[in-house]
Image 1 (cartoon, rainbow, N blue to C red):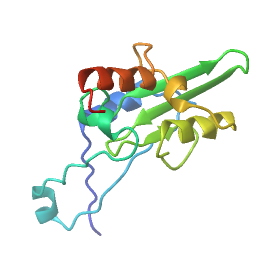
Image 2 (image 1 turned 60 degrees about the horizontal axis):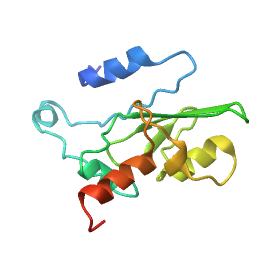
Image 3 (image 1 turned 30 degrees about the vertical axis):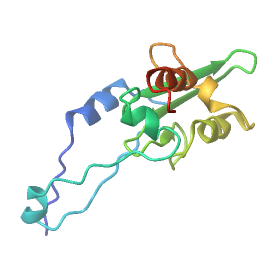
Image 4 (image 1 turned 45 degrees about the vertical axis):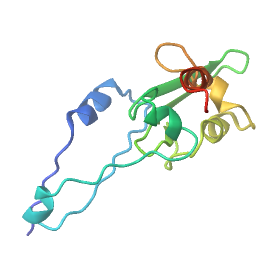
Amino acid sequence: MPTVSLHFDPSVFAHLARATGDDTVHLTLSLGGGDEALKTTPAAVAPHGPLAELMQAGLLTAGTELNFFQRRANRRGRAVVTAEGRLIVDGHASPFPSPSKAAEAITGNVINGWTLWHLPDGSTLDDLRRELRRNDPQH
């Protein structure tokens, strides 16, 4: 019977340590072809989509946790940015391609996710876009 060996980056364990019982944790596994596959380094993933420019400028990184709270609706949301520039939303199996689609999945309404999602420091994704434009007027 073959032996299965799983190797995780330490950031995976850090993410799992922060998770609560209500969180959905997403893991992606790639199957290799024996010892030779272990010697190869996976190709770097390039972000694409609406968050790509923020990530390429270093204003947003994979693994960043985003949150929102709507007091009137008593609704909360949590998402994690992937290396591809998508958002994994708690309770949903597939990542979302944009902040607004991720927010809509939780609220059930068409909503501006750029102003809704907050980074750990309290700033919004829209704040990051404005910062990008200030730093690089071509955007």
